[in-house]
Image 1: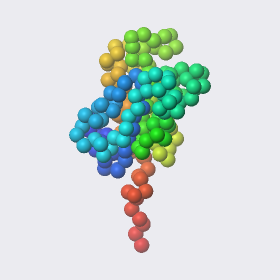
Image 2: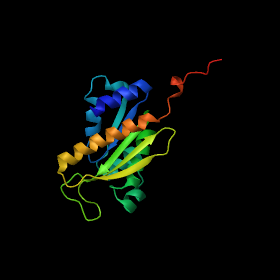
Image 3: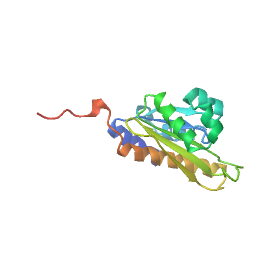
Image 4: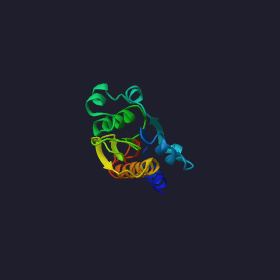
Length: 169
């Protein structure tokens, strides 16, 4: 349902989206492109499971990965910014987390960091601790939350210049 709502709202505003995914491995892109006609809204997805992929495909800095680790808001920010810069999308969401099994005291299973980059806005990040629900559940909750972030980002995203009506004389 969220993917359909995202597509409808983005389409009505003439905006496009992209996704940069780590722990979901392409599930966000899959949820969006499961809907027929999604190609007019979904620009592209980046599956950057390894740190090298994050660096090469999205421009995440090695220093950021070393200092904060892959599961951090700092990396989520750079992933979202990189996806926006390397696409034609108006909004980009990023996810990086620990779906499980495993984790640590400082980065427990179920922790996911999100980024939302929008043209004309400051990139925002947040961390959600879904808990040790199991790999499948954490990944699904992450997809749902990422779709909700994109929907929320559409609410105040600027319209592309070609969609802005000229003032009436």
